[in-house]
Length: 213
Image (cartoon, rainbow, N blue to C red; front, side, top):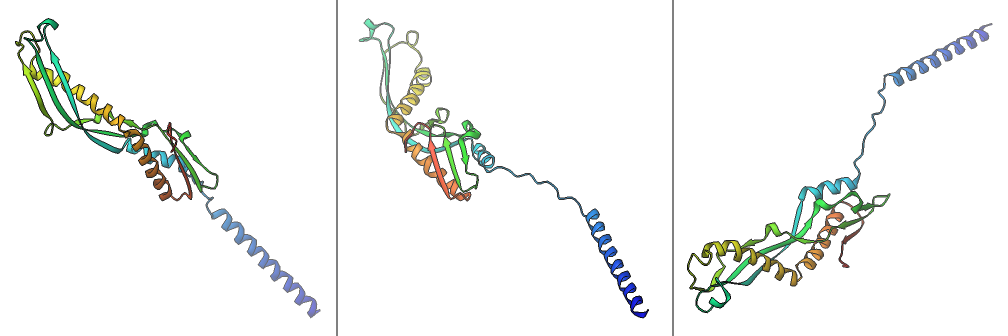
């Protein structure tokens, strides 16, 4: 009889412990907040945001000097007697680089494991709006003005409206002939390879559109 009573007590205690465990589990499960969903930013988007923030990336500037010849006469047969003529040495700066606003999501490829990346840059270009003339170092090499003001344009107007715009055009042409775009392509490739490695990519490839580097 005593043995049976001990067995009943043991079973009752076990049942109480089991019920307590079940209550604790249910209580903690109900009280625990559901894990919140987290959104991840794709590395490609992060790279684009950083690059587009720069807008125009200048990698190289050429400092050049060009001669601009300007002449004006009321008529060809009057050139010997009536003529306005200038030869101006124009010095200035020509910048070149990449317009990063041209980048699209397709310009960046990232491997599934995030270890490899390829960036395709747009072709480098000369930023014509940023071409500047160094007036302090520019000078008039030759000047001849035998043309009355009512037959030829004013010297200042000729300088501002004709000579300076032509000077910028010649500076750009000279920079292009001397390989400014090729230099910008090489410098841009090297720069962005280091940029991507610094972001943690193990294998990096940078392609410059139109250039086999």
